[in-house]
Image (cartoon, rainbow, N blue to C red):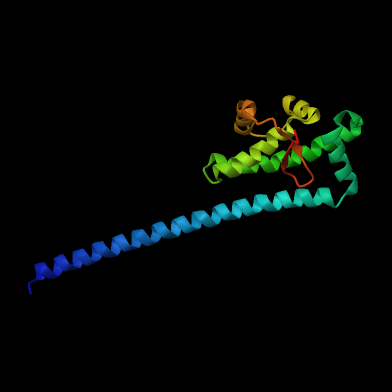
Length: 171
């Protein structure tokens, strides 16, 4: 066997090693990306659960939310303010979902469900006024996306119920 043949075999083995290493790294990067995505979604799910827990552990907040959803004109000025703060917190969670969606890290159907909840909430006159006043800390991308797609809203969704999800009306 001559040294040229040994060198050629060495180069082939080296090339196979590099390809195998690159393949392994690609798999690891994909797994890491999936893990980060899962962690992001889990964090938002935990924030959503915390919001719902906050609502369900306070009879006063639950009653306020239900009255605001069913009879918005019956709220006092202070109740309107408290309701807007509750909704602001919920919209912050929704913006987190939007950020994942806009970066391709949240499935289309998951975002569609979240956006239907947003559009359902925006049917409430208190929330609509709050949103239109632009006294919100949200990114312009989120605001523009919501405003641009509001007309596509299926208005058979009425409001967000105690579970924090939009419900279809009986009509």
